[in-house]
Image (cartoon, rainbow, N blue to C red; front, side, top):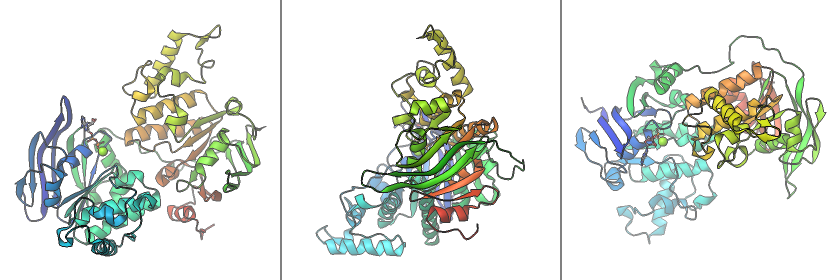
Length: 512
Ligand SMILES: Nc1ncnc2c1ncn2[C@@H]1O[C@H](COP(=O)(O)OP(=O)(O)O)[C@@H](O)[C@H]1O
Ligand SMILES: [Mg+2]
């Protein structure tokens, strides 16, 4: 089977942790010089498989063939000796140390002799950064770098030890869209220099844009390997989930959509922080009944402040907010909820859920009177549990019973609990922030369907997301925020990703 073009072959790799079967059987061939994406839902076994290659775990069964030879990889040092480098999902850098120090930390290149030769170390770091066009300052403390720059340090660290096979475990999960694009270019450049790359992701757009081939892993088994050019996103999604997936999108669905009256109106809303810095700069727009208004932007450009100003969690210093015809500029959170606000915040653990409370208590919070749970002013336990059970079923909250503490659920299932609760209140306006961040495809699909269904039932939806694909898939109009300003609002029908991307970076769009 193995020939010169194959750098790595895995045959029947299995891994159990005690009772838990993480990998049942994985077969995989990786060709020299290709970008090979491994995709699969959360928990499919991707990281376990990569950790086996990186010498962190030992397989329970199966064979690893590297450059035609069966090998054992007992520890990470053996992995680097075999030319395998891994960039983990969670960074391993020391923030107080410089880029150069981190690159050679604990593994001084023999050629340099001891670490005492600092200048040589810095030179080597500079040379590496230049060679791969990473633009890193070797003397910069890592703690001062952006997430994207830190990731490049991690990649360079693997390359510094001459990794021929580079493993990137969900590298884009922590990146903003422009950083993702930069990373994809970095990967292109590495391929051009003959490196082989195993790239883990569950984002279909990334699969399509960067890989030569793609292998899907589901429940610990390799399901399929395709040439990326030969396979559609829907095919990959089906292999990942194990059934047909409806990739939600309004794009090109042709239906003429009509909207009702404005439900939310912002008029020159401004917010400053305690140092007088402008966080929101005279923002005006409205959202109509039945409409999804998407707000795109790189994280940290005022979107969070905007959502909290609308929800009443942060005060504004100028302008006015109107909800269902009522001036709520100075209204409390509870008053806004009464006026028709549903709010799904970004930090669901801090603001969205009581993690120590049960699923039932969380789903029912703010819904007691509506759901008929109160009797003579007291909570009727039986009704509460029945209500929760119906929501658990409807929203497919996996592994939950009414009494399960919400903190025990996975991120995707917690998200479903928040959405179930907010939709149950039947809000005229639903403000949704980063709704699928950290979710896998199955759960994202569900969340997207619910958002669109809410709009179709006549709710106004304000969708705040830094995932451009999500904004484009769901929105009727798209507003772009940059540096506290609403740069422009575009109709979905005429908006394209290039224009929105330019606006997200503060640039003026050419097209109107
Ligand atoms: N050290 C471990 N001990 C027990 N179970 C583990 C361990 N590492 C991973 N698992 C389990 O193995 C399965 C696969 O996990 P993982 O490889 O992290 O998936 P992925 O990276 O595809 O999300 C999960 O069910 C996970 O809980
Ligand atoms: Mg993983």
